[in-house]
Length: 419
Image 1 (cartoon, rainbow, N blue to C red):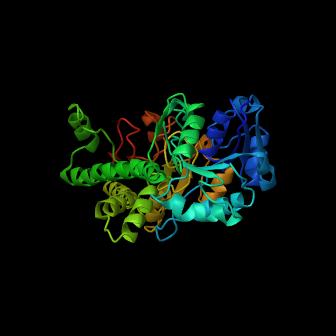
Image 2 (image 1 turned 90 degrees about the horizontal axis):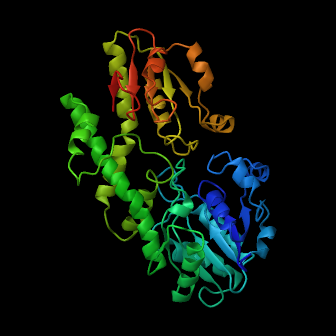
Image 3 (image 1 turned 30 degrees about the vertical axis):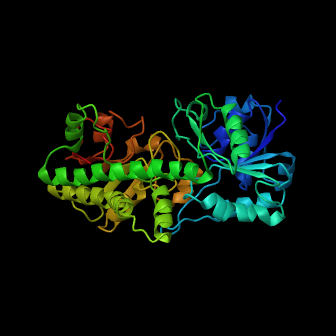
């Protein structure tokens, strides 16, 4: 086994697959502050469904812990904690700060700390390194720092962490080479060594900012085409016959990447005296789509002669994306919240969501197996889960006549209305 012993700090959608990848060649310690998560993983169960029971059983060089004392044996620390936003859409750096504070208590000479969490350019050196140096050691003299932005696509079983090209960087040329070689040893797709930590940080945050801006354009077009009375999906299919058209579909933009990362870049721009108008306008457009879907649902209920007060609506899907159990920063509940303002009774159902996450969400829900025993004034298919795609007849049967079926993600062939 290689002389490097790696500790992964944070075992969510990013950290756990990365730990499993490195454990094929190195001794790896997986650390998380959530003891329940550690218990699950120690029993070979991953609630995120990113890693199978068989995979966990077959990795003998990977151990799990919630004790920072167990990390002292490591000499490479890879930080994969969340980087959320607060209620004011400002970066919440506390998970990164707390992880860095914890590492400062166990950091040794010649250790390397690599950050993967998405941040604004400069955050690693401005926020994280000062916390690490509180132990008395100095970056590039006593220890090294790297930044390699995560490139996990939750729910994607084809593009796994090893098969996605990885950007790497280091705090100087010496550590940049070490970090690059480390990732190159497990990433079969190869690596791209950036010239600095800031360049690597910026490369990640603009990936999701670009996607957010592009989706905002499609969503704004959907608003326009809805007023004209033409189908946005048909328009996109026609336009996509040209080779250089970027084919995207309208929809909700939630989750912990596209719906969050642009605020980090906007925050940095504002701190420099710049006005990131396009970025923030795109965020506003995408955040408005849930209200638009709710309004269109109300219009269809009225046009079909259904009473709005106490109407029963079933929303299928509540995760932030298809075929994935992650409910963080989902925008589906925004649809339900808007409809409830009209006196509508909302129930959710999602075959991917765990009992624990239903409790976290605190919404009325039905087990997916139970929905056939109920009838509703309308159904909204909000997420493009495989269980919903093309199931027009089954979903129609859930509606009282006349049916009202709202399709947010293009899952159905013949909905009453689709975004």
